[in-house]
Length: 362
Image 1 (cartoon, rainbow, N blue to C red):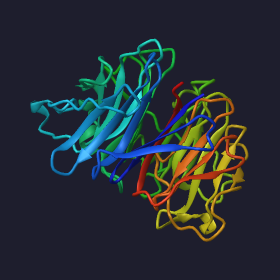
Image 2 (cartoon, helix red, strand yellow):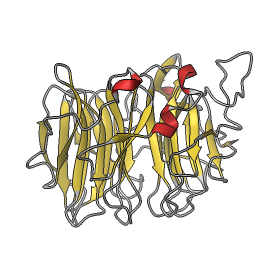
Image 3 (cartoon, one colour):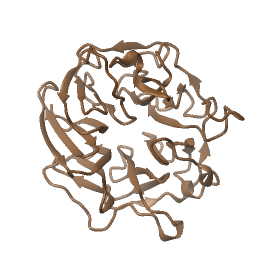
């Protein structure tokens, strides 16, 4: 068994490999002095593919691909993601790279800033704008969240190719049932406390992250800008699962790749105080779809901790038992080989950790 751990940072991409998830061999930084907000690990093919959303301060954003786990990279001369001229927009950043369903091995989705969705039919070499979402009448009213005006969550349905769910800051959750031709806002039950005239609008919520139950694809979990929610009907309606957490503010939401109803969360104190609750580094796990929560901290820093964890800086691998990984803005990355029960330090003194992805590659 070999697990690949990809760590996107503000100054490049680091790749670590391990056969036991305790000893890690790391390379990097790849794409030195660039921000890597998005990494996709595509294990649907015989040779796993790594995709990196790279933002170069001089040359702009691009998507690079590697079919040899980072030994070499295919960096296209022309930008693989570009807004058509008639949109009047320019790509600022790639926030999400999501492989499509298993039986569509060449489909890759990209969520970007400004808020738009792109789709590739050639494994990430080229992408085209999903016009149905871009032309949605709500789009001119979507606002940037604190991190930007971006689509940061893309969740293809594992068996229904026509179903897709996306989430953005700030705009909320949207769903399509016809392959992207039309889209509907899907935020019923999600609160937007910062809109005093209408705290439960149809759209405009600042959803931070959404995860899908791998075994029950109609069950979804969301971390909102104050609010933690579950949907049991594919995102049509949402109910709070924040009880039992020390705070309902945070960024990541991660679903276990095999165990139904097992999710991971990293609470922060509040939007105006973005420190871990009680200044303690704790990952919270629910094993009953959010009905109850357990703090996990064995092996995590015991001293006061003030760095936050960003929306894509926590992930699971697909081994059994699943590994769990979390990276902080102070450049530390921790791994658990037993689903969060015990943790060990994988890397420290890295640049600001922006995203973490992990998968079995051999």
